[in-house]
Amino acid sequence: MIAYNTQWLDALAIQRQSRNWYRKGLLSSIQLQEIQQKFESHFYTPNLFIRIGLGIFCWILVSSIFGLLGVTLIENFRNETCTGIVCVFFSVGLFATLEFVIKEKKFYQAGIDDALLYMAVILAIVGISLLFAPLFEKYEALYFLAALPLLLVAAVRYTDTVGTAFSFACSTAIIFYLFKESTVAARFIPFACMVFTAGTYYLVRTQKQNEVLRFWANCLTVLEACCLILFYISGNYFVVEGLGEQLFPGFSIPFSFIFWVFTAVVPFAYIYFGLEKKDRLLLRIGLLLLAISVITFKYYFSLGHYEVTLTIGGGILLAVAYFAINYLKKKPGRYTYTEDRSEEEISLEQTEAILIAQTAGSPTAPDKGFDFGGGKFGGGGAGGNY
Image 1 (cartoon, one colour):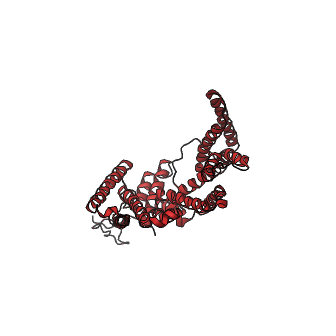
Image 2 (cartoon, helix red, strand yellow; image 1 turned 180 degrees about the vertical axis):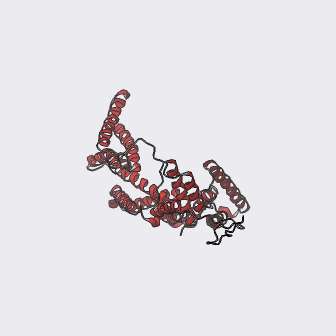
Image 3 (cartoon, rainbow, N blue to C red; image 1 turned 90 degrees about the horizontal axis):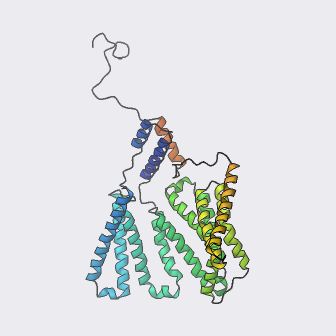
């Protein structure tokens, strides 16, 4: 299923975690060296700047080749069907090249594999859309239904977080357009999105610690963040009103106070549960959405001069800070200002591997040519001659 060598992926995670433990003083330099040697990864993964440079270079190179092919077939490119076939054909070639550089060149997050993946997916989606344009124009949801499997391939086979985010967005768009087809169902789009995001979030939370899914830990984190954000957006008063006005001109929100309460309460709920469950993602998103809530209320309710708005906003932030500080004082030991370098999660199997490596290192074999002997009691070198 996954394109990369899973043993090397485990080795990368073990190396990262062992370095974190070394910085915390839990491992000695000798133990760290033994772990790094025992769990080697043969992937080519350059630093961020080289990765970006290689990605840009690959993108320009592939675009040039595709442009040259377009100039060669310029007459046929006027036909959408021919253009779609060329895009799909070129996409298949890019996927084959991607598999080659992963298997043979051992690329992992090297920039080239990222660029090949994104261009292959984009060309495949464009090609399929052009081939089935007459049908897709009648049912807009088909565009997203066609794109979803390709995005899922990027997320599942190549553990790509961007593909994961777009897969979630694509699924949301499918729900939107399916409900949009019916005048009655369209009024329940916000609630359908809430149910979808809540169910997805619950599924992600329950499966996140599954050892089998450890290679997709970053993808699950992205999916979790998308669920939290979309759940709030689905009930934000500004979004609901704008969506209703677009679908039903002159639309007025029934029971609007429910959406006002939702807009105000959800960010505080995120912050509270983020503090209670020691969930950084939930806490950070809650703080971000709190600012969006303030902007939403400011859009509809003018507080007069800017200094009045700033004063009230500052008072709200002080109140939140005061509540958070007093809440944290009641739970000593759970929170600290000390930097936690262990950002990434590590599975139980990987932790066990580290412990085994540092407590049971590989024995060192004696050099060839050195043989014990000369003694009469077990050959331990106890003879009279040297």
